Length: 237
Ligand SMILES: [Zn+2]
Image (tube, rainbow, N blue to C red; front, side):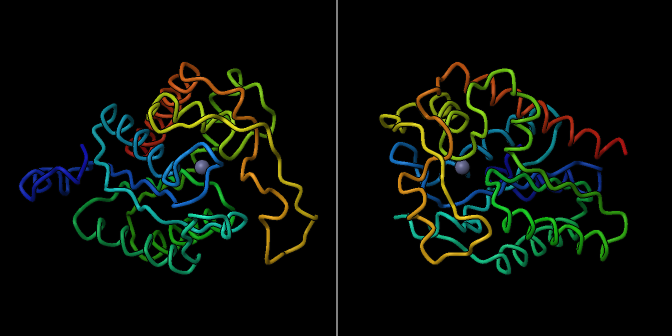
């Protein structure tokens, strides 16, 4: 069930009853010339809602902002720091735990390294401080690579490429524009630069040309099933 549509009385019935909660995390981030800035949020939320109906988990409203590094100067990206994200994740988990929810999955539609590290660090702090809390931190891209490898034609596809374009063609076909050509960033190894956009001007990491909506439907379904299995394992543990 989606918490955003529930009432206080709806939630009261779920408290202290072992009901799991999925918290979807997204970004406001450039996704090439063809996908909307909220792509990560929209995908994570859709998959979380499917996994929620399969398991009975509640789904919180998504966190629309995340930490973006290499896309931070592309037009439209609105990034928050790892510190802010960590603090936000800790606050959300502690608030849910205080409401009697002890099985929580932080599910991220964005795979950035600093972003994921902030979520993991938040989760580690929460399990240290809240005895009995069961927490998982899941990166959507890891799930896709695990369950949809046989569907994908593009090795190393990661951002606004085959995977995300396919899924958005399935979920929000009217919001997808003409897919641009294949592109991969060419960041200089190990360097931290003030202008990462210089090394991938189109903002695509993979091949949007290999995308199609039917493939996107399968990837969404398989991702949701994989997330549902993780939610289930948290309850059974
Ligand atoms: Zn994305």
